[in-house]
Image (cartoon, rainbow, N blue to C red; front, side, top):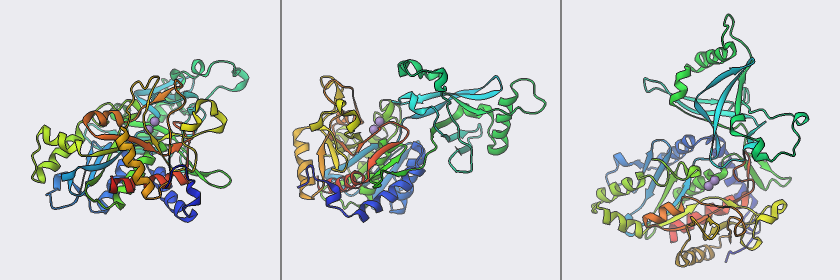
Length: 447
Ligand code: MN
Ligand code: MN
Protein backbone atom coordinates (compact mmCIF):
# COMPACT_ATOMS: atom_id res chain seq x y z
CA UNK A 1 0.00 0.00 0.00
CA UNK A 2 1.12 3.57 -0.08
CA UNK A 3 -1.52 6.14 0.90
CA UNK A 4 -0.28 8.68 3.46
CA UNK A 5 2.96 6.78 4.06
CA UNK A 6 6.06 8.81 4.89
CA UNK A 7 8.68 8.42 2.17
CA UNK A 8 11.62 8.94 4.57
CA UNK A 9 10.63 5.68 6.34
CA UNK A 10 10.69 3.51 3.22
CA UNK A 11 13.48 4.87 0.98
CA UNK A 12 17.15 5.28 1.85
CA UNK A 13 18.55 8.77 2.35
CA UNK A 14 21.20 7.82 -0.18
CA UNK A 15 18.79 7.15 -3.07
CA UNK A 16 16.81 10.30 -2.28
CA UNK A 17 19.98 12.44 -2.22
CA UNK A 18 21.28 10.89 -5.45
CA UNK A 19 18.15 11.87 -7.35
CA UNK A 20 18.12 15.29 -5.65
CA UNK A 21 21.70 16.02 -6.71
CA UNK A 22 20.97 15.32 -10.37
CA UNK A 23 17.82 17.44 -10.17
CA UNK A 24 19.72 20.36 -8.60
CA UNK A 25 22.15 20.31 -11.56
CA UNK A 26 19.25 20.46 -13.99
CA UNK A 27 17.26 23.19 -12.24
CA UNK A 28 20.38 25.35 -11.96
CA UNK A 29 20.93 25.06 -15.74
CA UNK A 30 17.29 25.35 -16.86
CA UNK A 31 16.74 29.05 -16.14
CA UNK A 32 14.32 29.47 -19.07
CA UNK A 33 11.96 27.23 -21.04
CA UNK A 34 14.46 27.16 -23.93
CA UNK A 35 17.30 25.97 -21.66
CA UNK A 36 15.05 23.28 -20.13
CA UNK A 37 14.15 21.96 -23.58
CA UNK A 38 17.83 22.02 -24.66
CA UNK A 39 18.76 19.98 -21.58
CA UNK A 40 16.08 17.38 -22.26
CA UNK A 41 16.84 17.13 -25.98
CA UNK A 42 20.43 16.26 -25.09
CA UNK A 43 19.30 13.55 -22.62
CA UNK A 44 16.90 12.07 -25.20
CA UNK A 45 19.50 12.01 -28.00
CA UNK A 46 22.04 10.36 -25.68
CA UNK A 47 19.45 7.69 -24.95
CA UNK A 48 18.95 6.95 -28.66
CA UNK A 49 15.86 9.03 -29.43
CA UNK A 50 15.69 10.10 -33.10
CA UNK A 51 14.13 13.27 -34.44
CA UNK A 52 10.76 12.72 -36.14
CA UNK A 53 12.23 13.99 -39.44
CA UNK A 54 14.71 11.06 -39.44
CA UNK A 55 12.25 8.50 -38.10
CA UNK A 56 11.65 5.47 -40.33
CA UNK A 57 9.36 3.41 -38.08
CA UNK A 58 12.14 0.94 -37.25
CA UNK A 59 13.38 2.95 -34.27
CA UNK A 60 11.38 2.65 -31.06
CA UNK A 61 12.28 6.05 -29.64
CA UNK A 62 11.31 9.29 -31.38
CA UNK A 63 11.01 12.97 -30.44
CA UNK A 64 10.24 16.42 -31.76
CA UNK A 65 11.17 19.88 -30.45
CA UNK A 66 8.70 22.65 -31.26
CA UNK A 67 10.24 26.15 -31.65
CA UNK A 68 12.80 25.35 -28.97
CA UNK A 69 10.11 25.78 -26.30
CA UNK A 70 8.07 22.59 -26.23
CA UNK A 71 8.79 18.93 -26.85
CA UNK A 72 7.15 15.54 -27.38
CA UNK A 73 8.88 12.15 -27.10
CA UNK A 74 7.50 8.62 -27.44
CA UNK A 75 8.99 5.16 -26.88
CA UNK A 76 7.34 1.92 -28.03
CA UNK A 77 4.51 0.56 -30.17
CA UNK A 78 1.63 3.03 -30.31
CA UNK A 79 -1.06 0.55 -31.47
CA UNK A 80 -2.62 0.29 -28.01
CA UNK A 81 -2.18 3.95 -27.08
CA UNK A 82 0.42 5.92 -25.15
CA UNK A 83 0.84 6.60 -21.43
CA UNK A 84 1.97 10.22 -21.36
CA UNK A 85 3.36 12.47 -18.66
CA UNK A 86 2.82 16.13 -19.58
CA UNK A 87 4.36 19.09 -17.78
CA UNK A 88 5.21 22.72 -18.48
CA UNK A 89 8.66 24.29 -18.71
CA UNK A 90 7.74 27.98 -18.43
CA UNK A 91 7.82 29.63 -15.00
CA UNK A 92 6.71 32.99 -13.59
CA UNK A 93 9.33 35.67 -14.23
CA UNK A 94 9.96 39.28 -15.24
CA UNK A 95 10.42 39.87 -19.00
CA UNK A 96 12.06 42.91 -20.60
CA UNK A 97 9.73 45.09 -22.69
CA UNK A 98 10.78 45.16 -26.39
CA UNK A 99 12.04 48.79 -26.27
CA UNK A 100 13.18 48.90 -22.67
CA UNK A 101 16.00 51.42 -22.14
CA UNK A 102 15.81 54.91 -20.70
CA UNK A 103 17.72 57.26 -18.47
CA UNK A 104 16.48 59.33 -15.55
CA UNK A 105 18.64 61.62 -13.39
CA UNK A 106 21.89 59.81 -14.06
CA UNK A 107 20.54 56.25 -13.75
CA UNK A 108 20.00 54.00 -16.76
CA UNK A 109 17.03 51.67 -16.40
CA UNK A 110 14.99 49.13 -18.36
CA UNK A 111 11.22 48.62 -18.44
CA UNK A 112 9.89 45.16 -17.63
CA UNK A 113 6.69 43.15 -18.00
CA UNK A 114 5.85 40.43 -15.50
CA UNK A 115 4.91 36.99 -16.85
CA UNK A 116 2.45 34.72 -15.08
CA UNK A 117 1.01 34.82 -11.58
CA UNK A 118 3.61 36.71 -9.55
CA UNK A 119 3.31 38.50 -6.21
CA UNK A 120 5.13 41.57 -7.48
CA UNK A 121 6.70 42.55 -4.14
CA UNK A 122 8.69 39.29 -4.06
CA UNK A 123 10.71 40.42 -7.07
CA UNK A 124 11.99 43.72 -5.65
CA UNK A 125 15.40 43.88 -3.92
CA UNK A 126 16.26 40.49 -5.37
CA UNK A 127 19.39 39.71 -7.42
CA UNK A 128 18.26 38.95 -10.98
CA UNK A 129 19.97 37.46 -14.02
CA UNK A 130 19.06 38.44 -17.59
CA UNK A 131 18.73 35.24 -19.61
CA UNK A 132 17.56 34.50 -23.13
CA UNK A 133 18.25 35.04 -26.82
CA UNK A 134 18.42 38.00 -29.20
CA UNK A 135 18.06 37.48 -32.93
CA UNK A 136 19.99 39.72 -35.32
CA UNK A 137 18.58 40.74 -38.71
CA UNK A 138 20.90 38.13 -40.25
CA UNK A 139 19.09 35.46 -38.24
CA UNK A 140 22.13 34.97 -36.00
CA UNK A 141 21.12 34.11 -32.43
CA UNK A 142 22.96 35.59 -29.47
CA UNK A 143 22.56 33.78 -26.16
CA UNK A 144 22.87 35.91 -23.04
CA UNK A 145 23.08 34.89 -19.41
CA UNK A 146 24.13 38.08 -17.60
CA UNK A 147 24.42 37.46 -13.87
CA UNK A 148 24.59 33.67 -14.17
CA UNK A 149 28.20 33.42 -12.94
CA UNK A 150 29.45 34.64 -9.57
CA UNK A 151 31.97 37.02 -11.16
CA UNK A 152 29.32 38.86 -13.20
CA UNK A 153 27.05 41.72 -12.10
CA UNK A 154 23.40 41.04 -11.29
CA UNK A 155 20.40 43.30 -11.93
CA UNK A 156 17.79 44.51 -9.48
CA UNK A 157 14.40 46.21 -9.08
CA UNK A 158 15.11 48.49 -6.10
CA UNK A 159 12.50 48.78 -3.37
CA UNK A 160 11.82 51.86 -1.27
CA UNK A 161 13.47 52.27 2.15
CA UNK A 162 11.19 51.70 5.19
CA UNK A 163 11.89 55.27 6.38
CA UNK A 164 9.85 56.63 3.48
CA UNK A 165 7.43 53.76 3.19
CA UNK A 166 5.38 52.54 6.14
CA UNK A 167 3.99 49.05 5.71
CA UNK A 168 0.37 50.09 6.18
CA UNK A 169 -0.44 50.35 2.46
CA UNK A 170 -2.03 47.39 0.71
CA UNK A 171 0.76 45.57 -1.15
CA UNK A 172 -1.25 45.43 -4.37
CA UNK A 173 -1.58 49.24 -4.29
CA UNK A 174 2.05 49.74 -3.50
CA UNK A 175 3.92 47.30 -5.73
CA UNK A 176 2.77 48.44 -9.16
CA UNK A 177 4.04 47.06 -12.47
CA UNK A 178 5.27 50.51 -13.53
CA UNK A 179 7.67 50.53 -10.57
CA UNK A 180 9.31 47.34 -11.83
CA UNK A 181 12.19 49.02 -13.63
CA UNK A 182 15.51 47.29 -13.53
CA UNK A 183 18.64 49.33 -12.76
CA UNK A 184 21.36 48.99 -15.40
CA UNK A 185 23.99 51.49 -14.36
CA UNK A 186 25.11 55.01 -13.46
CA UNK A 187 28.38 55.84 -15.30
CA UNK A 188 28.17 58.32 -18.23
CA UNK A 189 29.88 57.79 -21.58
CA UNK A 190 32.64 60.37 -22.10
CA UNK A 191 31.79 63.22 -24.45
CA UNK A 192 28.04 62.50 -24.60
CA UNK A 193 25.50 65.14 -23.52
CA UNK A 194 22.19 63.36 -24.15
CA UNK A 195 21.47 60.17 -22.14
CA UNK A 196 25.18 59.48 -21.51
CA UNK A 197 24.55 56.70 -18.96
CA UNK A 198 22.18 54.80 -21.22
CA UNK A 199 24.72 55.20 -24.04
CA UNK A 200 27.49 53.72 -21.88
CA UNK A 201 25.29 50.69 -21.10
CA UNK A 202 24.58 50.25 -24.83
CA UNK A 203 28.32 50.50 -25.55
CA UNK A 204 29.09 47.73 -23.03
CA UNK A 205 26.39 45.54 -24.59
CA UNK A 206 27.84 46.22 -28.04
CA UNK A 207 31.47 45.60 -27.03
CA UNK A 208 30.82 42.54 -24.90
CA UNK A 209 27.94 40.81 -26.69
CA UNK A 210 27.74 42.51 -30.14
CA UNK A 211 24.17 43.56 -29.34
CA UNK A 212 22.52 46.73 -30.68
CA UNK A 213 19.55 48.46 -29.03
CA UNK A 214 17.26 47.41 -31.88
CA UNK A 215 18.19 43.73 -31.32
CA UNK A 216 16.21 43.84 -28.06
CA UNK A 217 13.06 44.13 -30.16
CA UNK A 218 13.64 40.65 -31.64
CA UNK A 219 14.51 38.93 -28.39
CA UNK A 220 13.14 36.58 -25.74
CA UNK A 221 14.74 37.95 -22.58
CA UNK A 222 13.77 37.03 -19.04
CA UNK A 223 14.86 38.35 -15.67
CA UNK A 224 15.07 35.37 -13.35
CA UNK A 225 16.37 35.11 -9.77
CA UNK A 226 20.18 34.96 -9.69
CA UNK A 227 20.03 32.27 -7.00
CA UNK A 228 21.60 28.83 -6.91
CA UNK A 229 19.52 25.82 -5.86
CA UNK A 230 20.23 25.14 -2.17
CA UNK A 231 19.39 22.53 0.41
CA UNK A 232 16.96 24.05 2.90
CA UNK A 233 16.42 23.22 6.57
CA UNK A 234 18.83 22.14 9.32
CA UNK A 235 18.17 18.57 8.18
CA UNK A 236 18.54 19.51 4.47
CA UNK A 237 15.21 17.85 3.73
CA UNK A 238 14.03 20.48 1.21
CA UNK A 239 15.46 21.91 -2.00
CA UNK A 240 14.96 25.63 -2.56
CA UNK A 241 15.22 26.83 -6.17
CA UNK A 242 13.66 29.04 -8.81
CA UNK A 243 11.36 27.28 -11.31
CA UNK A 244 10.30 24.07 -9.52
CA UNK A 245 6.84 24.91 -10.96
CA UNK A 246 6.83 23.03 -13.23
CA UNK A 247 10.31 22.13 -14.40
CA UNK A 248 10.39 19.62 -11.53
CA UNK A 249 7.63 17.55 -13.17
CA UNK A 250 9.27 17.95 -16.58
CA UNK A 251 12.45 16.49 -15.06
CA UNK A 252 10.65 13.68 -13.23
CA UNK A 253 8.69 12.91 -16.42
CA UNK A 254 11.74 12.77 -18.70
CA UNK A 255 13.69 10.68 -16.13
CA UNK A 256 10.72 8.31 -15.89
CA UNK A 257 10.56 8.09 -19.69
CA UNK A 258 14.27 7.26 -19.92
CA UNK A 259 13.96 4.48 -17.34
CA UNK A 260 10.50 3.04 -18.10
CA UNK A 261 9.98 -0.15 -20.07
CA UNK A 262 6.95 0.19 -22.36
CA UNK A 263 4.53 -2.72 -21.95
CA UNK A 264 1.08 -2.94 -23.55
CA UNK A 265 1.16 0.76 -24.33
CA UNK A 266 3.91 3.08 -25.51
CA UNK A 267 5.29 5.63 -23.05
CA UNK A 268 5.76 9.33 -23.71
CA UNK A 269 6.31 12.85 -22.46
CA UNK A 270 4.93 16.19 -23.68
CA UNK A 271 6.48 19.40 -22.36
CA UNK A 272 4.61 22.64 -22.91
CA UNK A 273 5.45 26.33 -22.74
CA UNK A 274 2.99 29.13 -21.80
CA UNK A 275 1.07 27.28 -19.07
CA UNK A 276 1.47 30.17 -16.67
CA UNK A 277 -0.46 32.49 -19.01
CA UNK A 278 -3.24 30.07 -19.98
CA UNK A 279 -1.53 27.58 -22.32
CA UNK A 280 -1.83 30.04 -25.23
CA UNK A 281 0.05 30.27 -28.52
CA UNK A 282 1.82 27.74 -30.72
CA UNK A 283 3.99 26.27 -27.96
CA UNK A 284 1.33 25.85 -25.23
CA UNK A 285 -1.06 23.00 -24.50
CA UNK A 286 -3.70 24.50 -26.81
CA UNK A 287 -1.25 24.29 -29.74
CA UNK A 288 -1.41 21.63 -32.46
CA UNK A 289 2.23 20.54 -32.67
CA UNK A 290 1.78 17.32 -30.70
CA UNK A 291 -1.19 16.30 -32.85
CA UNK A 292 0.93 16.78 -35.98
CA UNK A 293 3.66 14.64 -34.39
CA UNK A 294 1.21 11.85 -33.49
CA UNK A 295 -0.21 11.92 -37.04
CA UNK A 296 3.30 11.42 -38.44
CA UNK A 297 3.86 8.54 -36.02
CA UNK A 298 0.65 6.89 -37.21
CA UNK A 299 1.58 7.34 -40.86
CA UNK A 300 5.19 6.14 -40.60
CA UNK A 301 4.01 3.07 -38.68
CA UNK A 302 1.62 2.09 -41.46
CA UNK A 303 -1.60 3.31 -39.83
CA UNK A 304 -4.08 5.76 -41.30
CA UNK A 305 -3.41 9.36 -40.22
CA UNK A 306 -7.00 10.62 -40.58
CA UNK A 307 -8.68 12.74 -37.91
CA UNK A 308 -10.61 9.69 -36.71
CA UNK A 309 -7.43 7.56 -36.49
CA UNK A 310 -5.82 10.27 -34.38
CA UNK A 311 -8.95 10.53 -32.22
CA UNK A 312 -8.79 6.77 -31.68
CA UNK A 313 -5.10 6.86 -30.69
CA UNK A 314 -5.83 9.69 -28.24
CA UNK A 315 -8.86 7.91 -26.77
CA UNK A 316 -6.69 4.85 -26.01
CA UNK A 317 -4.04 7.01 -24.36
CA UNK A 318 -3.67 8.31 -20.81
CA UNK A 319 -2.42 11.76 -19.80
CA UNK A 320 -0.75 12.21 -16.45
CA UNK A 321 -0.98 15.99 -16.20
CA UNK A 322 2.08 16.48 -14.03
CA UNK A 323 2.11 19.76 -12.18
CA UNK A 324 2.92 20.96 -8.71
CA UNK A 325 0.26 21.45 -6.06
CA UNK A 326 0.25 23.40 -2.83
CA UNK A 327 2.02 21.90 0.16
CA UNK A 328 0.52 22.37 3.61
CA UNK A 329 2.19 25.35 5.25
CA UNK A 330 1.60 25.45 9.05
CA UNK A 331 2.05 29.25 9.09
CA UNK A 332 -0.82 29.73 6.63
CA UNK A 333 -3.03 26.82 7.68
CA UNK A 334 -6.20 28.92 7.25
CA UNK A 335 -6.20 28.59 3.44
CA UNK A 336 -5.87 24.81 3.35
CA UNK A 337 -8.41 22.02 3.79
CA UNK A 338 -6.24 19.92 6.08
CA UNK A 339 -7.80 16.66 4.89
CA UNK A 340 -7.20 17.47 1.23
CA UNK A 341 -3.76 19.02 1.00
CA UNK A 342 -0.35 17.52 0.29
CA UNK A 343 1.98 17.20 3.27
CA UNK A 344 5.77 17.31 3.01
CA UNK A 345 7.34 13.88 2.63
CA UNK A 346 4.18 11.89 1.93
CA UNK A 347 4.82 11.40 -1.76
CA UNK A 348 3.06 12.23 -5.01
CA UNK A 349 -0.23 14.09 -4.67
CA UNK A 350 -3.29 13.08 -6.73
CA UNK A 351 -5.32 16.18 -7.56
CA UNK A 352 -8.73 14.90 -8.63
CA UNK A 353 -9.82 18.32 -9.82
CA UNK A 354 -8.63 21.89 -10.24
CA UNK A 355 -10.66 25.06 -10.93
CA UNK A 356 -12.21 27.60 -8.56
CA UNK A 357 -15.54 28.32 -6.87
CA UNK A 358 -18.09 25.64 -7.81
CA UNK A 359 -15.41 23.74 -9.76
CA UNK A 360 -15.48 26.47 -12.44
CA UNK A 361 -12.85 25.94 -15.14
CA UNK A 362 -12.02 22.57 -13.60
CA UNK A 363 -10.55 19.51 -15.16
CA UNK A 364 -11.76 16.57 -13.09
CA UNK A 365 -10.35 13.06 -13.42
CA UNK A 366 -12.96 10.32 -13.82
CA UNK A 367 -13.32 7.93 -10.89
CA UNK A 368 -12.32 5.04 -13.16
CA UNK A 369 -8.90 6.57 -13.93
CA UNK A 370 -8.27 7.57 -10.30
CA UNK A 371 -9.07 3.95 -9.37
CA UNK A 372 -6.52 2.61 -11.85
CA UNK A 373 -3.85 5.07 -10.71
CA UNK A 374 -4.45 4.20 -7.05
CA UNK A 375 -4.14 0.49 -7.83
CA UNK A 376 -0.81 0.85 -9.68
CA UNK A 377 0.67 3.08 -6.96
CA UNK A 378 -0.41 0.76 -4.14
CA UNK A 379 0.76 -2.35 -5.98
CA UNK A 380 4.22 -0.80 -6.33
CA UNK A 381 4.41 0.55 -2.79
CA UNK A 382 4.60 4.19 -3.93
CA UNK A 383 3.74 6.81 -1.28
CA UNK A 384 0.83 8.95 -2.46
CA UNK A 385 -1.69 11.36 -0.98
CA UNK A 386 -4.55 13.58 -2.11
CA UNK A 387 -4.37 17.33 -2.60
CA UNK A 388 -6.56 20.19 -3.76
CA UNK A 389 -5.68 23.85 -4.22
CA UNK A 390 -7.02 25.31 -0.97
CA UNK A 391 -10.36 25.36 0.81
CA UNK A 392 -13.56 25.68 -1.23
CA UNK A 393 -13.99 29.30 -2.39
CA UNK A 394 -10.43 30.23 -1.39
CA UNK A 395 -8.72 30.96 -4.71
CA UNK A 396 -7.99 28.13 -7.11
CA UNK A 397 -6.12 27.46 -10.31
CA UNK A 398 -5.67 25.21 -13.32
CA UNK A 399 -3.11 23.24 -15.30
CA UNK A 400 -2.73 21.92 -18.85
CA UNK A 401 -5.15 19.10 -17.93
CA UNK A 402 -8.35 20.66 -19.23
CA UNK A 403 -6.93 21.33 -22.69
CA UNK A 404 -5.68 17.75 -23.04
CA UNK A 405 -8.89 16.29 -21.64
CA UNK A 406 -10.81 18.27 -24.28
CA UNK A 407 -8.80 16.50 -26.98
CA UNK A 408 -9.97 13.14 -25.64
CA UNK A 409 -7.10 12.01 -23.40
CA UNK A 410 -8.14 10.25 -20.17
CA UNK A 411 -6.50 12.81 -17.89
CA UNK A 412 -5.53 13.16 -14.23
CA UNK A 413 -3.59 15.89 -12.41
CA UNK A 414 -0.80 14.80 -10.06
CA UNK A 415 2.57 15.99 -8.83
CA UNK A 416 4.64 17.01 -5.82
CA UNK A 417 3.55 19.72 -3.37
CA UNK A 418 5.49 22.98 -3.14
CA UNK A 419 5.76 25.62 -0.45
CA UNK A 420 6.12 29.26 -1.67
CA UNK A 421 4.86 28.29 -5.14
CA UNK A 422 5.50 31.03 -7.75
CA UNK A 423 7.95 32.78 -5.41
CA UNK A 424 11.49 33.42 -6.70
CA UNK A 425 12.70 30.61 -4.42
CA UNK A 426 10.24 27.69 -4.16
CA UNK A 427 10.54 24.74 -1.76
CA UNK A 428 10.09 21.04 -2.44
CA UNK A 429 10.68 18.07 -0.17
CA UNK A 430 13.46 15.84 -1.51
CA UNK A 431 11.33 12.83 -0.56
CA UNK A 432 8.41 14.06 -2.69
CA UNK A 433 10.77 14.86 -5.57
CA UNK A 434 12.06 11.28 -5.67
CA UNK A 435 8.76 9.54 -4.94
CA UNK A 436 6.96 11.46 -7.71
CA UNK A 437 9.58 10.28 -10.21
CA UNK A 438 9.00 6.67 -9.07
CA UNK A 439 5.24 7.19 -9.40
CA UNK A 440 5.52 8.50 -12.98
CA UNK A 441 7.70 5.53 -13.94
CA UNK A 442 5.34 2.82 -12.69
CA UNK A 443 2.26 4.63 -14.02
CA UNK A 444 3.84 4.95 -17.50
CA UNK A 445 4.61 1.24 -17.46
CA UNK A 446 1.43 -0.17 -15.96
CA UNK A 447 -1.60 2.02 -16.73
MN1 MN B 1 2.43 24.63 -12.82
MN1 MN C 1 2.27 27.83 -11.85
